[in-house]
Image (cartoon, rainbow, N blue to C red):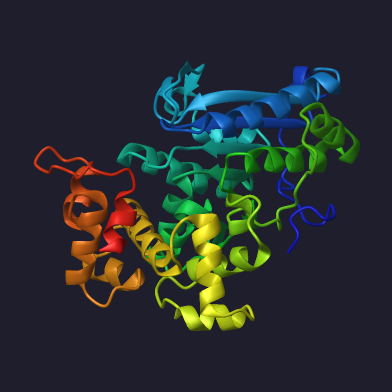
Amino acid sequence: MALYSSFDDTLLSSTLTRRGSKDLDVRLRIAIVLSDGFSMLALGAIVEALSLAGRLSGERFVQSLLFGINGTELRSRSGIQITVGQALSEAEGVSALAKSYDAMILCTGNTLSVDDERAVRLVARIAKRHGKSICVIGAAIRTLAESGHVLRCTEHWNRATALQETVSTVSVSDTIFCRDGLVVTSPGETAALDLTLALIRERLGHSLAGEVAAQLLAGTVRTGLSQQPRFAANRFRGIPRTLSAAIDKIEASIEYPLPLSKVASSLNISPRQLERLFAKYIGTSPQRYTRQTQLKHAMKLLEQSSMPIVEVALACGFRGTSTFNKSFKRAFGVTPIKFRRFGANPADEKPDHRAGNEVERAVSS
């Protein structure tokens, strides 16, 4: 379903926000709620687009305010510290906030504390009670998926597979935003700009949204159905289409790796031709690239899920934990168990730094 191909497909709820006499002209009022680890890129896209829409419309049609989910001192993912006016807990109550704003945008980091998760669930419950939309970026998507607040969502492609593996009741798409009832999910980053432009377009019209996009040099404004640019052609600029298609096939079949001959035949080339393409443009063989992809995917699952090690191994195309453990330690210097507990450099482990590409070493022996 297109999320804003027409005004029948809306991101904002139809529930009207009560205005005071001073706010009668305000047509879009957004509360932006941040947690530690938020993306400065996503926040900047949201704030700049809303601020510019306000200036272009005469400073009276758009209002936005920043809140901290559990405090006023927040640090972004890149380490930049900001101070917001109020913490969500210090506001007039989440219910009052839901009544005052047309929508809340939860711009969260890649992980949330227990208190932050509790606050996210509270916001979702109260927004639903008042019939208000919430737009969600970051780890709050997983929190809402696990608690049953969404049945379909999108998530950054780097985290989407782990979410789908661990929350089987949720359908995870690879689009730049997705609506499920009153909850709109977005992978964030530059997609946050497309989401904000959609909100502006819906409440203030196509003309103003287009002018904001032009001022921000957004050459192409994507719809919610637009896919995230995760595919090989986007990551390996200038490679032949045949090689791009081969990489996409390999990355789409991590759990059940395709034989080299099958990948090649599906592209109407020989295995030897495919090997030459990988060597020339990627600098490795198809087999090594496949193993690199499996190990990097395993790292994501260990970081982003609580799946047992044996399930991680199977989900990444390994037949058992023995080969998986050896390959993972050769690649990253630690066992999967210790990586999950301590990250890549626990104090009692000594990772191998003799070469720059650990994954390459792991698959070449």
